[in-house]
Structure formats: C-alpha cells, structure tokens
Length: 267
Image (cartoon, rainbow, N blue to C red; front, side, top):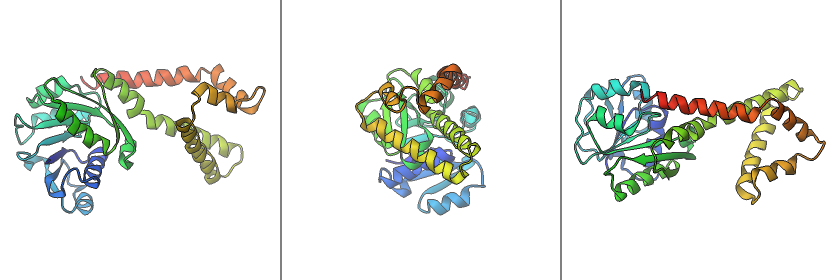
C-alpha cells in the first residue's frame, strides 16, 4: 500500500511512525505533505527515507490512501487549493474532529471516505480510535483501514457517524480531563506540604495502579469505590465534598460541551 499523509502535525507524524513500525507501508511508499517549511528539517531527520512534499507541489497520483490530518478549521482552504485531483480508486481517511463524511466528499469531489477520531495516546501507540465509513466502502477496505488504525492502539467501528462527535468528546478530548484531575491532585498535595516531585510520584503511581485495578478486577466501579471508601473514613469525606459540589454533573456538562463543539466544527 502507498500512503500520503496530508498534514504533518502530531497525529500525522504519529500515524507515520506506527505505519512504519509495524511495516504496514514501506518508507519509500509513504509521503508526508506539509504546508510550512519550519518542520521540514526535523521531519526529514526522523523519516530519512520518506518522501517529504510541500503542499503546493504535492502529487498523490500513486497513493492508494490519502490521510487527511489537517485542522478542521483549515480543511476548506486545503480542499479548495489542492494541487492534485483524486482518482476514483483512491481512499481518503480523515482524522479531523467534527468534519462529517458528506462535507469531505463534497469538498474533495470524492466518494471513498472513511472518517476516524483518534486520541493523543496514539502518539505512543496506546490510543483508541472510533471510525466509520461512507456507503460503498467494501468490507475488505474497512479491514485495511482497521489494520492501519490498530497499529496506533485500538480501533472500534461505529455504524452511526453521529456517534463520532460523542467519541470526540469522550476519548478524543478525554486525556485532557485526566491531566486536569491529576494536576488538581498534585497541587492539593503541594498545598498540604508534600514536595512537588514527590506529590507527582504519588499521584501518577496512584493513577497507574487504579487503571490496572479497573482492568484486572471483576468488580464494577461502584464496588471498587466502596472498597476504598470505608464508612466514616477519609475517602468518604472527600467523596462527600465531590457530591455536594455536583462533580459528576460538572464533568458530564463539560463532555456535552465538547460534543457540541465537535458538531459546530462541521460548519
């Protein structure tokens, strides 16, 4: 398979790494298309055998798959100024948040579109990606795409495209929610007098351990919480404050706001 990646931001580079790491594409069959000159040197250093092209001179005639990895706000400009035309047999994989398949098809004048939403742990091969496909995409083509997406972590096919906005809000934005909570815990530790580095160690290892407990326990989340929150104890005191301040509702409302923003990005 020959692949062209339009946009060499964090996700475009992460996908390139994973495709090459698992030998899903040969280096000389991969093309990275960039719009700015600033990153050229750095990208060439990391991918010496990969073809690096400027947006204005890119040619994807030989590519089987074009991955669209530009910011959703930039997509319309990019689509209107492409220096090439797509061929009927070529496939497009969009990893842009919010931009629906129909809009991509209209802007690119091309029907073979798969839309996916990865998240930032994709950068280290531990991401999760929800994806869906336009009508007419064959089962074998879907399997091909899933194989590529699985190289960045895990991929889950969704029948309904509208759910991708929910996935964007839940797992696409999700890592930032965890970082936010971790940061709050670390800062609480320092305010209680614990050295910042030590506070980071306690909180990060607590998160890692809790993750593995969730993954390896047969108990549900309520049961796991009750195991830690003994009656009249310290954990119960903290949870009471969380509940009094409607923390769950605040988190839910934040995620709903992210979903609404994903819908707005389609224009």
